Image (cartoon, rainbow, N blue to C red; front, side, top):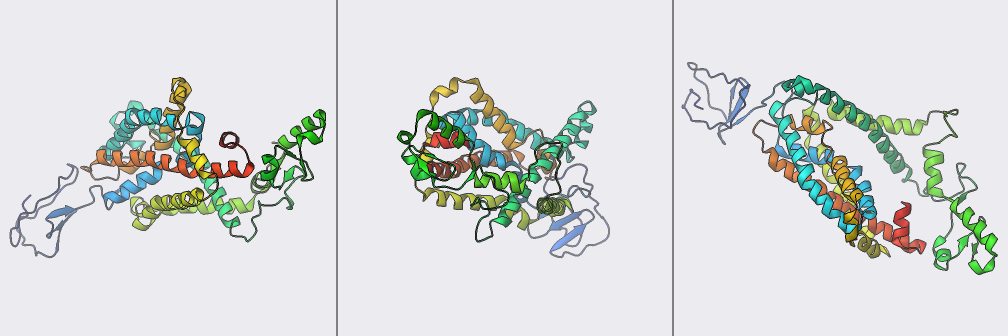
Length: 406
């Protein structure tokens, strides 16, 4: 593109979509400052490149890093930290990585790339984008409804996390004892390590009873009683945090502590979306939300690997059971995990990609985000199973028994 003006400099412009109109004055001379300004257009005379928001109404990402990190934050979540390690345990340990990788390459990546391309090309949200084919506009409303429902319960989980974060700032953790008003007679705080190591059962008064000390009928009764024992942490969550009632006939009162935490979580969502992409893509916010979880996971992994029994947990995680690959459920779980983790068909990817510039390399972005999400799941498995191995060591049982209970 040639811009006529003082100096008649040739400016090489990046390709701009057809909907961007460039007004080029032909007669009036223009000064040549560092940035030459034309309506809807800014030209950097140093780099000879055009800097412009292609969509004036919706805006664009300031740079590619904002989009990459926002998408990575969107894709990486509880499914990576909670669900993936559990599925590895349930479906043959390291063997589960094979169907997971196959589903990732042949199902997850194509869908992810398709949604990024669709959103970037149209620069529309998940509802209005279906103007391209009104017959399928119902898909857009379904995406919106699904994201709304997920957002409601997901923010509730974040409110629990915030509640626990505040509670953990105390010198004595409230879920570490059975001396609180929310505890029941079934709550026990005892040293099960030594008792389990000698194959005993803890009685209700905290005494370790061995098998040869009682009759068969008494032992069976103790086993039944032991199965009803509740840990202090479980009672803290159910009886205090959630304050669960006996049924729908007793709705209970407002849990104001949780209500405040939930309000804080939704306030953060509001602030992030207040000015659209310009507030959602702020460098400090997107770098923090995308990279801070990796810092926390790394700290937890280092701490977990220093605990006794952690190596046994990690080996349990990595040891494959190849015969499990013959089961259809393993392949089904792998496919479901791909959809749950990458979140295609929910509308979020279309929305995020719609703020990209028209000629952004979304294929490279899709590769980075998809495989980054996969590696995050794999990395989180080491964190979880190092802790599970430590728990098994403390309880004096196998890793398999602890994992089955969790």
